[in-house]
Length: 169
Image (tube, rainbow, N blue to C red):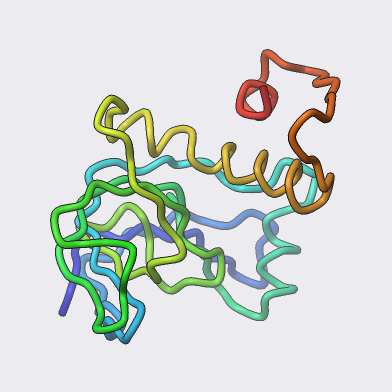
């Protein structure tokens, strides 16, 4: 199965700045037991580096020459693997494409694992879902896994007017 119009950030070892490269056609990975095929309806084009890490150094550390652009996506599930239990064909979902993926959220379709997405509420548009899912995942990971917060804990949120601060709140 193939998808069209994937966008990647490619790094040439002789350059410090990566280039955006659009490929005409990419082969999608096999669906697998826990895989889902998502028809992408919206994609957020943010680079997931807010800590001052340079994109070139990240690409070098990963040992690859390109990263997918548009990792925050929202779309409709078009096929599910044999062991997928939490999603069905036709579900509207939002999620994050893993940074080491060979797929881009700018494509027409992507294959993800069922654990990479969540059901999108009907009241939230595809654009809004793709635009905020990355910050929401970062907020959840920080509060739940790193902060080990439980019900009743109090949190002071600095910079609450930023995208991440709003998601935390």
